[in-house]
Image (cartoon, one colour):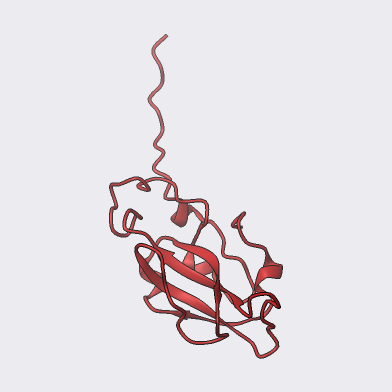
Length: 128
């Protein structure tokens, strides 16, 4: 499970909308963003691209101080594995990364061997 989100943060999620097929991605980054609406595609202010987002049910209340809703957004940055397979995340994944096939409304996504992409190979026996 991602150490950055808790299931209680996702209590009012109604559905997850994918802008790209999650089947073609080893991992996605997930974060909570504050948005003015419960539904529809939220604005995106990061580098890279948004690949999905969560929509909230009608019972979700806005923050009383800001009037904004907390919604989960799924995204990838330019240096992530899908764009640079031999780059920084050739092995391993960022802390907020989860396997998109494990994402469901109200459930934090999971890290899997696919999302972590372990390249460990057996080491040859050492010479004594």
